[in-house]
Amino acid sequence: MDRKSIDALLRPDAYPHPVGEARCIETHISWLLLAGDLAYKIKKPVDFGFLDFSTPDKHLRCCEEEVRLNRRWRWTSTWAWSRCAARRRRSPPSLTRSMSVTPA
Image: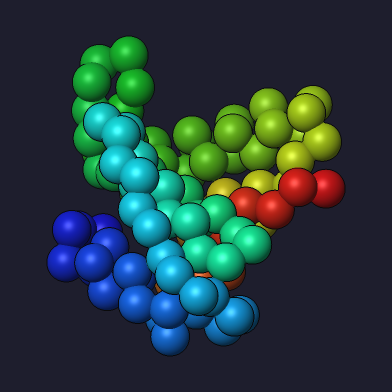
């Protein structure tokens, strides 16, 4: 995922649900897209030593751990779960399925 792809996701018609306006909040680790009633989190392919998303396998392990940790707080991390499941199948997830995060 690169900045050009993120910019494309700022269009409301990029989503399968109603979106009046999409906004992006960028951190050193992720892009957080606010689109309608949903938030989409995309981790950047970075390696800070203490945090490493630089390869698909490392990203997969981090996704699985995030899902495990978020379950304690009653959040359903659909994006992470879908992405992790897709990595196991070695098939690409749909972009929106792979990123949506909704409260349980």
